[in-house]
Length: 207
Image 1 (cartoon, rainbow, N blue to C red):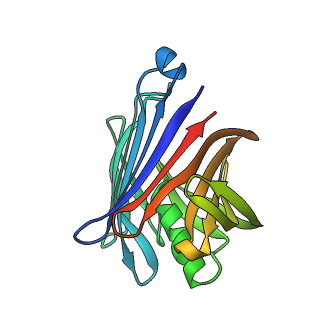
Image 2: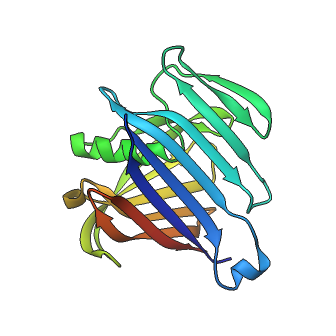
């Protein structure tokens, strides 16, 4: 299957809104319909990136997941609905969703080295995410050529590994995002354009 992943980050009145959209393209669009859309609203706090709301709607894969989660930091709970069922998870520390964790890693790279473990809300429960730096290399993307540092994260028990190739001169913005499942490349997105005022857009292909 081939497709396209687009990511957009926009400033809001009290933080940021990030949107990820995956959809089939070309011949794949003829045999598959639907898309995956994820959004995360978050803001910067003293301890880093704090998501306030996360949603996903998947009409592309067999899972057909629809979820909406609110992060209540006063009560220490992440709660909402997943496919019509109510879910509640207790947050003992700062937690992230699939989207906001990428911006937490950017934040931590700017501050020094990232932690080796984070907590992420994986649709219906909190999971530990292991993080490691895998080195640096020169990458060529439509937006230019950069020296990038690779940072990899994987939730415990998950077969999906996400690698971000981040560029220091761009505030550690990832210029390449790759996702592997069972060792096979499933998604690759590359930076096509960058504007600090208007936000950034990542466009790539899935395999």
